[in-house]
Length: 254
Image (tube, rainbow, N blue to C red; front, side, top):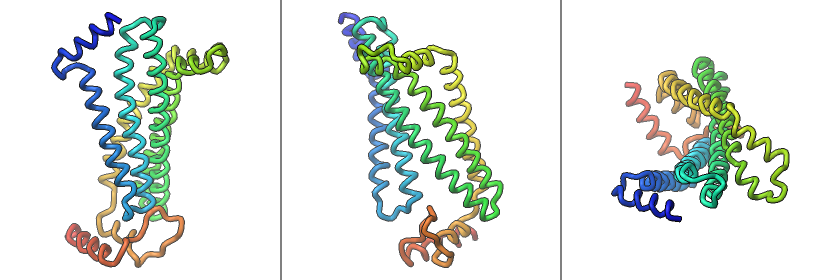
């Protein structure tokens, strides 16, 4: 108890420069951003694709806030023995936070990967082969990152599962998770996630340069094209909006 009191006192005496304040501020900002994305999701003017993008961004942003909270718990867990009350409680809380955050990030990543996959097929059908390949590549990388992230998040859940199953803590799947968490595979997975993130950024930059101009994009939403029920893209909500976007496209082209 004395060590906990001393550590908290040191954080408060840092005048806002300690990890406690930094993590708390990051969590608040992530939650605010998640609320904003949630509000945008319910905008009636959004199409199915936009709603799916906002939903995925909301899940990933919420996962980032949970991960920041997990870093605060981890800073406590590393300061105390894992056999003590504080250390054991911190390990259990850390496992729960990482499991929830990882699950949300995985679902959001799979959503974004599915959007990229659909965009890739769409551009391939329109003979934009380079752009379609870029979207498909980003979908594959995003899916791989989501799978690796889910495995890493699940590896932290050993203390939580051991606490939940109680007397059955020697179950095979609990021991397997703890063995995986202590193996060399977790650092390798984390390194691959970092490399994949850089690759995703590079592909996203390439997509910006390969993306067609505003006039072509207007044509995809225009009432002049043939619409199908399964299209992720949606037509403009009314004639006024369509004419306004047409004027903006003409200005951008000229």
